[in-house]
Image (cartoon, helix red, strand yellow):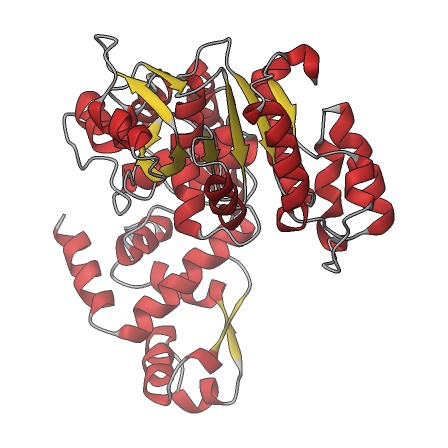
Length: 422
């Protein structure tokens, strides 16, 4: 042990000696043995003089060269007073690291990756994770414990709407455990984003998109901004009593924004009049129509499908029909298709057909977003999409105000709400 301490002290005393031993370790990593040359350009004149002294040659002899053989250094070491110590051991002692070849390092790295990938595959709740995401998590050094927690979180997503801090407290015992700035919060959001496979909508901010990712899994992060605009709708509480605020809004024909928080204690929603609800995308059109028809049961989502809107629609009885209208552009048709796919025959489109589209074209080009039309499922919307691919412009709701007035007059004012009439 005494000799080892002396060796360490000797080599640590001179930077040049440590640098040469680092170079020796690098050669071993590349070639699996101590071979090749070491460039003298990496050393100062003083350091070169120290190297010459160790090699047992004059500085002038070494100074005339640009490099020296690593074998010369190894031979000089073995002939020194430290010769009883193996050169490999000496290199490890000076560098503070075990010697490894590139092949050994890569093999060990691959083995670690395989172990991590195998660990990921153990959790059924994480079956959706792609190989690339597994690799990303491996590179982020996600631990076995963290992976188990993530699997638990994804496997226990709430069936009903819940605030993220409440969920974090329930699952982790810490209401701030999934906050945006925490490591677990970031990893959890990444998985929710992967699972949801949402597409960022045109003009949508990162904050809005982030909220939508959480909302898709019944998690609420911003309840005040998570709202839907309504008019003439009645909400019932768990005791099936009409909530006084909802009743008051109907009595005074108030249009109001309902945050998701206000929907958590509502068990059923119904139109104040009839069995149909009218849903619009555009807020200015919505306001104009509610001025014309102040008792019209109507919803406005303002071009964003927040969790509040989906929660609202889910609370209507199955007998409630939805008359839906949106802008006829790729984004508007996509939203209409989502509503139709979720609620099927209960959804009837207002003034949304290929003929109405062609007769009310705007000058706003949609050529760059036409690819979104390829995902449409509803046949009627597909017909509009085919016309849009030809015209390559949008048709906006404001232009159809007169059409909506006529439609609502027939459907609502005349009280002819039976589906057979349309």
